[in-house]
Length: 227
Image 1 (cartoon, rainbow, N blue to C red):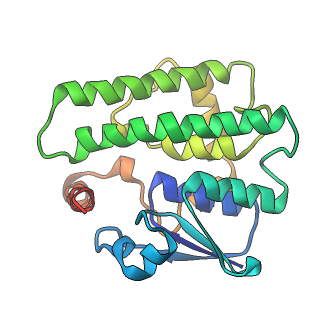
Image 2: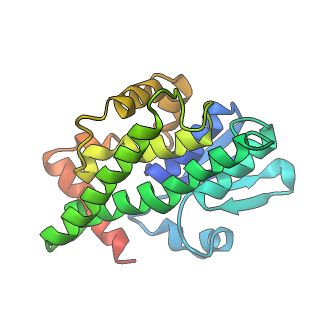
Image 3: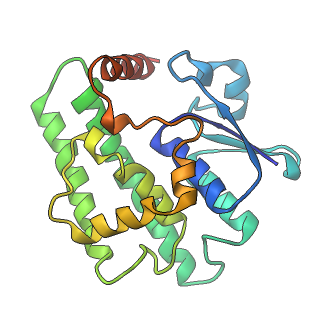
């Protein structure tokens, strides 16, 4: 049994979708970021960086792992699935996983900050991160030309990138004119385990928020950024 400490964010969904795809038994514990649950002594004892997600593997002596990419690699290696054990397949998957962790995630995350959350609108910053996110989308589109999956076969690389790219509307990033990316997004969305995973710990279609609901979400996000 695995305990998953998470919230409804792209990084949190990376862990929950992976758990669902691997059909592992787990219990999800919702971490209220707005209330500062991630800064409590109990949580910091698991992740000194005070970020979700975190897992605790009861079957491995309560082994605790933080950082979403590390969690995905651990779970894939634990089951022998979604990450090839030999080269060149293993390297291909890890390269595209790191592409998300070093590119897609940080750039879309900063686009969110300046486009949605930062009180002062700074056009140069908004354009910088939206344009770079779009460029990375184009890299994915090129890689998916003639390929069903990013690394040849379905893997944690697809899960990691999808959990972020699917939120493109919230980041204000266009996916127009990217047919390969569109096809891949729909293919990912059609997977039952992917759909279940993004409803953990609770459904939150942030790209569709409007009015008061959007204001509340943005207010919570601004509070989190200050902690």
